[in-house]
Image (cartoon, rainbow, N blue to C red; front, top):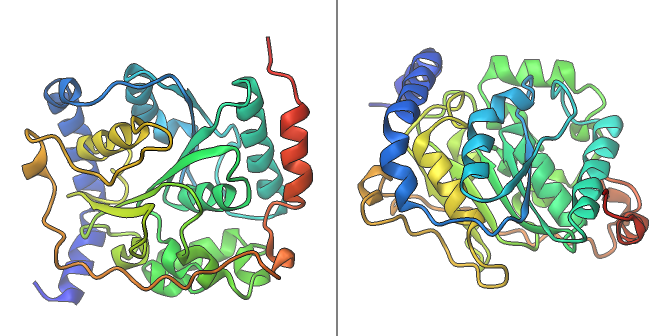
Length: 296
């Protein structure tokens, strides 16, 4: 299958394949669930994708909670893109969840555009974040969304994010590609008909990895093997993170990604780049999070 035909097929069959993944979750989860590790009760904050709400991550959150974690929604309504209001909201939401759990670090899970929020929050507030998992997030080329997604999606994103990071951050490409300073997992699919899968690849680093699954973009939050990856990654002991290795009974469900070539790490850092912070004064935010009392 040549590349152009593959992209056309992926785009045209997104909805049908997502429906099949939902059916697979309903039929196959009882087989997968017993083979997954149990959670330690730490908080997990979920961010939905572009033009979706918390409802889109409900099936994923339900199974994460059943596995023994505390799942939190972003409570931001429809995700219409990144702007100053969204930046303030997601930072406040992280601080709220962190404080509510007595200063226990929060894992961040972001679907599609929501994964960008998760990565950037972890970059600016690493003392509050335990780890990051992104699902179908084309973070690698956020400076050029025309390369990160098919043309109609690109136009839609630009329409809804007129005052977004694309217009204000000249160094966003290197920043987005460089993983945050916490364990980071990118789940991607070469069958993605919305985001270019190559743009969802972390560079090879000690605390970053890429996990391939079979599936669509729209079905990423209901794909049973994706959910299995999320639960497995969340169950890693804090400070003892290891790269993903599926349970022996599930190994055949994950493609052989040995031919995938991750990009080089541009090693972007905040040194001398304070003007590029997306969430305001990180230092004051950290100070505030430590003084807030957990809710009764």
